[in-house]
Length: 401
Image: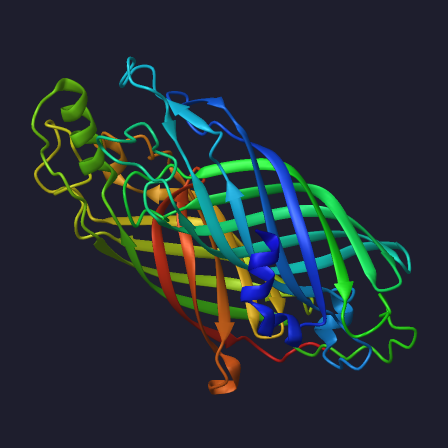
């Protein structure tokens, strides 16, 4: 299987600096009290193409991140041994299955510590898309609420210990993997797994220096200081409320109320005060507004609800941004200051707290003040909205050097 993936994507191999074969042995996690995973064993195999940081790189980000590695790859994750059971839903039915997921991903591997020139301890993040072969089906696979659609968003985080000898680099460490459809379809619990990952990479361009012997001068960073950041977001989601009503109908043997779950559109605006204190990092606080025009029609499946539920929610969030050249990884979390809807919602995803994680890309116009990206707006790690964003950055005062 790995050989077939390697042959199909041979052009990438000719372009990359290293090619790696990797594998993982792990276990699926239970995500809800009412969903049991009696069989959890899973594993994955894959190939990745890596591009290293070289001494000739003059961007300050490369040295600031201790000479990171960028990778792109393809992975096959085997969930065929995993079983999912809901004892209170369909107690007499056979446990549902998860099948196999194919994932295309990109990876950023940051060597946080280098004990020696040929060893490192790194933190790696992955993002990509997955295609699953066996998903939820109302009749044939009704208890698999973990993978609700064929297409999913993929995220992974890992710590690795690496050792280089000659052209070879061996890597091993604990990994966390997540596949979810981002609330773009129902059901949307997502499948989480943890395991031990190993890989062996071969450098195609000769024995490389893990850390260049001549690092050269550190590029000065002259963009420290406060700035305002404004985000406009358009979000898409399906309704958990509709899904729960149909699930109760099915359990009771009644005709379904909805039967299908269309996409709904939400809008968001954020104003944040941020401080850029390092080439790699900025932190601050943001005020978030979310407008959901559909609230009251679909999400509130409570007969005692008022006729007109407020459609705006306000929140305040702590924000942090990681920068690497034109890319940004943004994370935010905080409480809702006002969300009357949560008092009437008959769902299991209203906790009074929200999180957001996403990627942005700086556009070359207006002195790189504009960026576009996407993020996942979540409630207690469960995706609530998948959002597309447009951001504008406004520096305040003279930039520190």
